[in-house]
Amino acid sequence: MTELILASGSAIRAELLRRAGVEFTVETAAVDEAEIKASFRAERRPAIECVVALAEAKAARVSRRHNGALVIGADQMLVCDGVWYDKPADRAAAREQLLALRGKRHELVGAVCVLCDGERLWHVIERPALTMRRFSDGFLDDYLDAAGDAILTSVGAYQLEGLGVQLFEKIDGVFFAILGLPLLPLLAFLRGHGVVPQ
Image 1: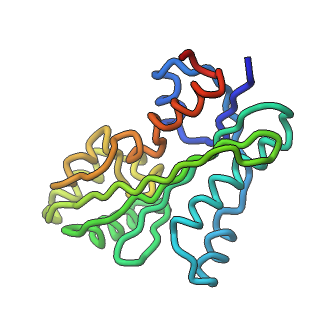
Image 2: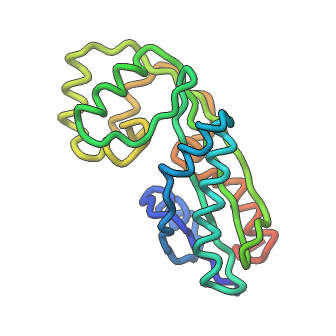
């Protein structure tokens, strides 16, 4: 069977694959995401191109070390009113970010690609859109207290699969893509390559 590697340190991406019954190993890739993002911003290139480049860079780094393996790379970026958001550095940054998103619609621009021997075989792009409700400042502080450090692990300072769902009034998009791994198209690709059963 072809070796399958997830080139991501995301616990939720790994959990989604495990729950789907996929056998794989995890090997994170050291990629300078800030440098790649700065380059794309300086060239005024769209967020979606940057996300694809980040996903491919992660997979390429791992792919070079594993001949014949299929390597999954993924990335996701939150975009609102033309602003690209990263994971907040601390609680204060998370609060500021959530206040900026309050009452607005944003996109979770995501890409997943699969490489083998450094060559991209497949990729998919997803752009789910989410609208935050106009929650009160008091609710926000209670949410931040209850969610704790988990808010620092996602670009939106929320986990939709947990308390974060209370921040929203509308969600358009596939749940798996919102969590950072468009699982159904990925599984279809893996079935086509004999990695998971037909």
